[in-house]
Length: 208
Picture 1: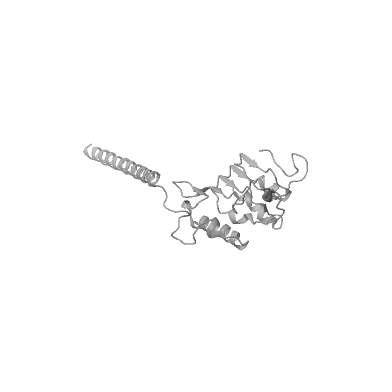
Picture 2: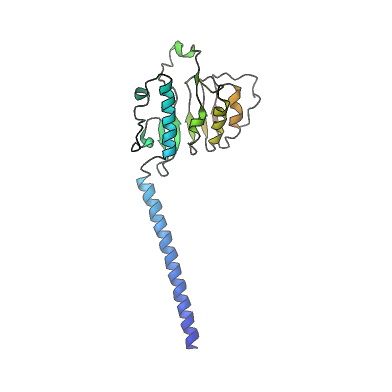
């Protein structure tokens, strides 16, 4: 009898120790999560930083002064892209969630010269495919066009968490439409003043 009681006590004590260990693990995890929430993430992800710098390089390759248009976008590994203008990150995860690239060239959009400008700015949208946590994307008032590189248009479909997409006042045509079908989280799509053809709903469009 004493042996059985000893075994029962030992088994009970072992079970109690296991429970304490599990509780300690949960408490430690809770402290880590709380610390991250309080202090936030201290930097952006490298692949996202490089994607943004690709856009800066694209702007510069078209003859524009990027140091004036995007002064905080510095090609330095110590530069936190979450602190750059036009970029908003999730304070906990550090992922880019909003990208506001409207009127990147900072034209006077109240001037008639902007609206009469027939020149397109050919952009490869594949440079943004690394921003997988992006929820809001504003590319309005840029005269962008991706008809030369259809694959660049298609890469827009990689942004599965995108909820708001503003493409107003660009020069996109129907080629870009199929990419919208894969944007499963999309709630708001603004396409006004582009070069779409056909009556609404345009063929290739989808129901939002």
